[in-house]
Amino acid sequence: MGKGTEGKQIAQNKKARHDYHIEETYEAGLVLTGTEIKSIRNRRVNLKDSFARVSRGEAWLHNLHISPYEQGNRYNHDPVRTRKLLLHRKEINKLIGLTKEKGYTLVPLKIYIKNGFAKVLIGLGKGKKKYDKREDLKKKAAKRDIERAFKDSQLGR
Image 1 (cartoon, rainbow, N blue to C red):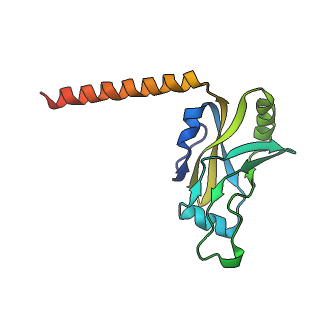
Image 2: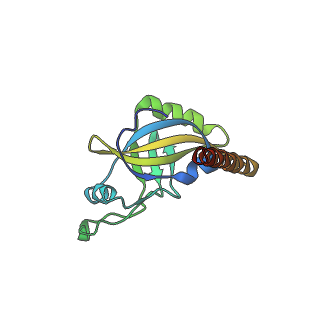
């Protein structure tokens, strides 16, 4: 993985590694409102359909669903608003070049709290074909069978 992600994990996009070959990861900060960070700390986040995009020299996170904060009343936020990602200029320039290539996309992999700040781990992914996904499922099943057989042999001594 990229930089250390030794924070408190809030949400993870399990489908991302199934649908994409993740080649590089980047740690990015999020620009949030007060009620959004409170909802994130309460683990009320969904990464399922979210994606990142670089436009006008800035990185943006789209379709990240952060549920409204229960005590937020009129100060609550729009649950799926576009949120700005905080990345270094060098990283943004690199991502601009990489995402221009055909088939590459920016996918959020997980959200976590690190040193009191909400961070998102962004992966540069290339879409998998259907046969790649089937191959991964076969490998996963074979690994599980091997582990089960090993465990049974350990118990049968």
